[in-house]
Image 1 (cartoon, rainbow, N blue to C red):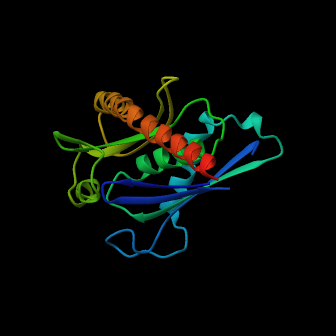
Image 2 (cartoon, one colour; image 1 turned 90 degrees about the horizontal axis):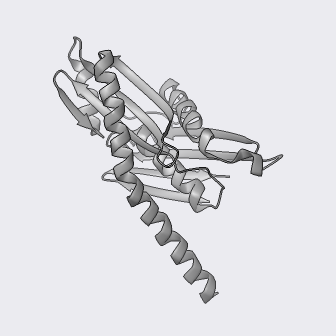
Length: 201
């Protein structure tokens, strides 16, 4: 099954091909302002691992003995919060394909730059903190299962105080709760459309 997700200007294509779940996340060379290569770099590998760790608790792997579920994410256009959106997109692709899951996995990012905070930052907002030095600059991405009220993945970078990190996690969880009904409606619409298409055939 295949799922394409658009989050503003961020475009991702998720394909999954199961007692085992494997993930592969790559950036198309033209996806970022700085042109990359097709060879998977260290950031791609880190994101692939985070994606796998975020999705694994949600998938009912015991229902697919002697099988392997592959999730492949190709980022076509990166306008920011790419890991959070990849988690959500991959989860939607799995659900749309009929893979049994305990819950959907939703992602949300937060960026701190001094005293200001941005939820689901754009690409320039994500990278602006790297140009300046000092403390209180960093970000985090949370993968969350809303029905189970469980964090399945957490990634942070930069320097953030403990209380800021805790507040940031809470903010990201609230963001996931706000996104949950939107994702549910999109999946219900896809199911209804599939039923209509089945009846036509």
